[in-house]
Length: 272
Image (cartoon, rainbow, N blue to C red; front, side, top):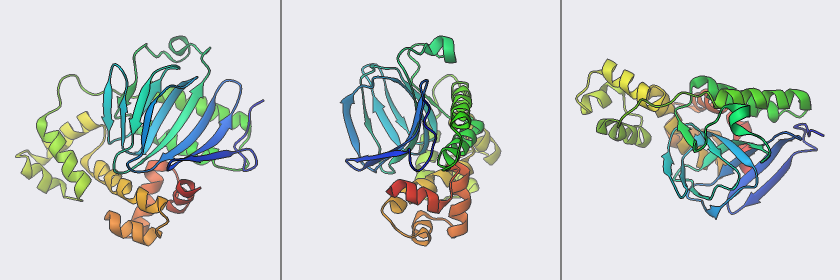
């Protein structure tokens, strides 16, 4: 029997700085939201189910015998059952919405996923919007189980059709620009001038490679600076100020845009 996302049925766990909440459990899939603290590491391990993850907020490093990825933007990931991997969560920590499928589920036939596909960066804005909406819905106490499961299947369909990066090697100036945006809210004109590029070319190339505009990346970076503060119990006003937002209302708008939740609800989720 499917388990609806109700206060009575949710299960929460906390281990080594991480917090995890079971949002839905059915016969064909389950969903969990997890918060990993800044600097947290997970040693090599495996899962006894297929796991598809949406990195909503934060930073993530993952190592497998074949690949190593370092993520600072939203991304969709797949870990087939039995895949050996290790994780670290960088300076911002990470908020991840995970969907688990049983080992009997045929990933290629059911979702069109080719073997070896693991993390896909720059998912389209529709993926993030649907992910945030789904998380908000699953946290609703009276959401019917049938509606919760339907929403998760729709999210999965959106996740596996997310866009890919352009072919080739990204330009060197891109990494420098991203680092600057992560450190401070520098203006687009100033950033383009630093790299010797026209603002229009800079914006279009940035969006092609990163999957969002420089201003959206900057807002996400500010929100990632606010995450550890919210998780540590700082007030919304303090988190907004220290993360570089104009005010608490600005933090609220960006938080809703990226996670589907209000800052107060997100803070409560991180501390539960």
